Image (tube, rainbow over all chains, first blue to last red; front, side, top):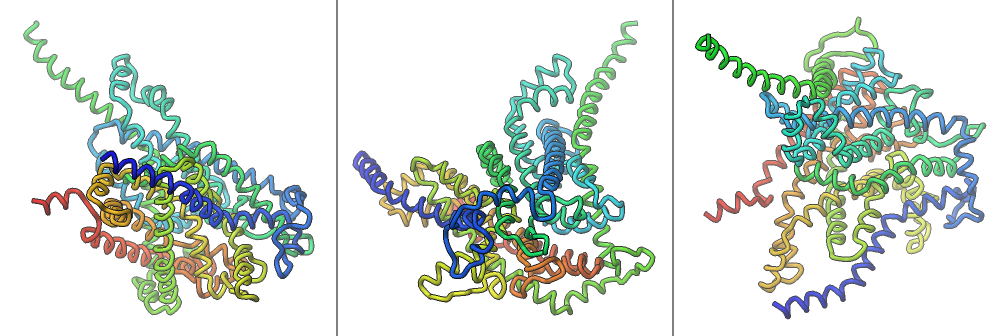
Length: 286
Length: 321
């Protein structure tokens, strides 16, 4: 046993440099397209469109990042605001309503609960695509397309995935919490509002980040729902910036994509321990 | 007086009890009301309307001209050469994308599952591509895979001068796979890693003491214990890869009126174009339902194979008996 363990540790020490070499090599491979992207965003268009290609920009064009806000014939900030408005209102609403749902499924033993929970689980697997387009048809008949109401309604109606997430989270709360509160005369709404919600910061952060990332990055929904004046950054950046003559401005578009991605990267770093944990909960216990 | 009151008190206690459970039932349904109302109005209703639409010639505008056509949209789908072609493309794409993605994600998880310092840093780095929104991802790969100005062809040119492989047109399915694998790695890796970390150390140690080498441990301990997780990732990945629409849509050279290259003309692209370009809402929703059925069949088939390769403690226990 002792011998085996020493040999095991010895092998581990020997393996370490090799492990790091592999890990770093993989990092390089994965980040190669992004590095190329960041370099190209610092070039002039002529440099990017030269053959054979050049790796580094002759002079780093940091003003590309200024031009993101000033050229292209549209206002980056206006569309960023649209994206922000939709992402914020949807994620705040849906995190809250999903927390309500998760609380109900975790803490109430009432008739009909288990059957409804089966529906939630089924909705996690059923392909979304069959509902997305018919939903669009319904909203367009209600004349709610080209408004932001669909996002508000989606937010108000919670999401099965996040209800599931909150349920898993609330299941771990000790039942003494509620009992004590009930003895003190708290109704279920007080219990939820002043005991469960304040203690669910981790789950709320996870849910918020997931939802925000989803709406901020979503291309398809705003593309079919919103007109050019009301659409989001995702849709605007799907095509390149144009100069007044209608020629594409590639490297500025790339710089715009960097600015567009940055909030999500920052958010990911701030909340990564929640995100990775949330993903595992949702993934493995399903 | 007291004898009259005492039987009356009992039902009142019962009523109070039942009123407590009644109140909890009301509270439960109040809490889930937002979801439940949304489920009925935004999921069930559109599903039903979608199915009804698929039985008509609805063009998205005129309800006056709407006509019931029965199952004609469905029979038409089977005769439509483009539909069959696009379904074939989607099957090819899934067959290409799924194994590459799963194997790479598994390898990354294995790499990270070692006991090295800074494991968390590398996990974060490997996950980062998944954080980038799809529109930016497509730009990253558009310029990386560009036929003339892309870095990949330039690197290949070092070995084979003058390489100009059209990754995004003739070989669009390859470009598409690269993008999907790259941005999907994070999710697969995190789930596989969680699975690997759930494998009890004693089992690995025991196998080692029995003289198993690394490969034997991997083959006879790690893989069997990972099959439930592999199964989960496989089912999820298949369902989403059959629905792939946004990547080829964004990769299409210009605007939504130009179809993507034939190579990446996936089933959902075909469906999308029927609805949003040709206003064939009836036919389009029929295509959606057919895809739904295809996905369900494939999922059921995968579930059927489960007992042949997915490890479960219950099954082993039965065999042992």
